[in-house]
Length: 239
Image (cartoon, rainbow, N blue to C red; front, side):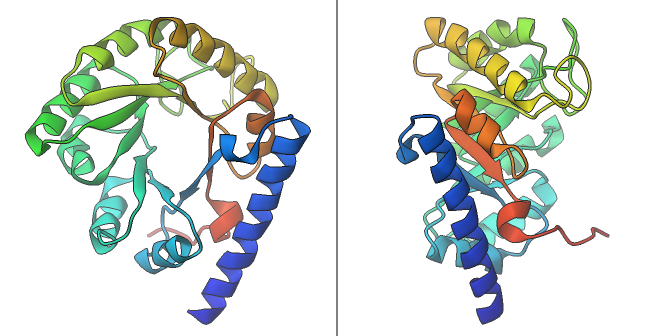
């Protein structure tokens, strides 16, 4: 455990330096960017160490991994983000522990999240996942709604009991016009965010950037970056 703590401390310090440097280069204050550590495939013991090291936001992308981990860490002061593609049959479980769902991409999911949040007596933050590789009316390869479908979803979230429209999320696309152009993709997301805030001023969270491209996200104006490998190391094989 001591070795793991030493490793996580060093990795976290390196990521912190990257974020701080990116903020300085962009003329932004460090406190404008929140680090979310993506702990998928890693044990609850790592989450506990990260909490001791000051991490307060963690993310998961699979309910079967997240639910027991969140339960094991229920005594910790953490904000849990769900960032994976979410099937409606997993919604009730996810709403029991997640504070924010970053992957809202269809009205059917909004309806299910709202019903579960009301049942649990919770208010759930929702980010609309934007697919920059999707054509009108389609979903992206990695989930998400095409840009022209955002306003409909935003209105659905805003009118749904138990839900709060928090902002937008994207994953740098692997295909389409933004493939390999992370900075351009994140700039586009910021344009979409600016337009969204015109009708929904409180939806000011922009979640973008991961271990390989967090600097591009910070430069574009992201408020949150989702970092896994750079903090926790190369993921162990699943199965």
